[in-house]
Amino acid sequence: MTVLYEDNHIIIVNKTVSEIVQGDKTGDKPLSEIVKEYLKEKYNKPGNVFCGVTHRLDRPTSGIVVFSKTSKALPRLNDMFKNKEISKTYWAVVKNAPKQPEGTLKHYLVRNEKQNKSYAYDTEKPNSKLAILHYKLIARSDKYSLLEIDLETGRHHQIRCQLAKIGSPIKGDLKYGAERSNPDGGISLHARKISFIHPVSKELIEVTAPVPEDNLWQALEAIVK
Image (cartoon, rainbow, N blue to C red; front, side, top):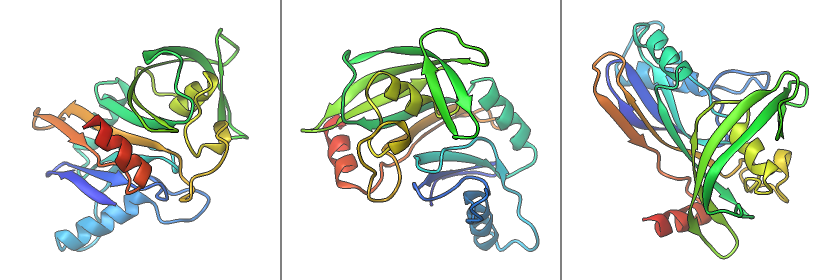
């Protein structure tokens, strides 16, 4: 975990692929607890430290996660995420680039709780939810392409599922059709940028998360620069 931004109300960290945002059945220590320990130590706080979870990021995904440091900011941030007042940009590495260098994907997603997987359809199905994202090809290496993605909706596994649907599964994402896993067990999806109006100070906050320390990520990022 690396701290990217911090003030009195908010702390924004760069999550690695192995970290979980909230506790789950694995019993592994969640990022929320790691942040609490960091705050306790940094500010020498006795007793319990407040750290509110405002949104989630899939475990195999890396990048930006926002936590609230105060009970005042937490409900405001939760509402901002819910009302799409927070702009999030993702980077995804795929082997098969989409046919068009940029475009909008619109599908109807049905979530299967048992499989922890979503399925994308071109037409509406029972219990389906509309999923919309915008993508742009921003870099290419010999074998892989880097896509920049802006979400219009926030559905379960949306980017993973929609890219797989058009034949461009994310590198390392076995669940959605990648040929092989990544050495670190994660997938090459990174929550790259976030921007929003601070819920308390009303200032514009813009944060960019460095890409993972991996040769392919570094090479693709260098092409973008």
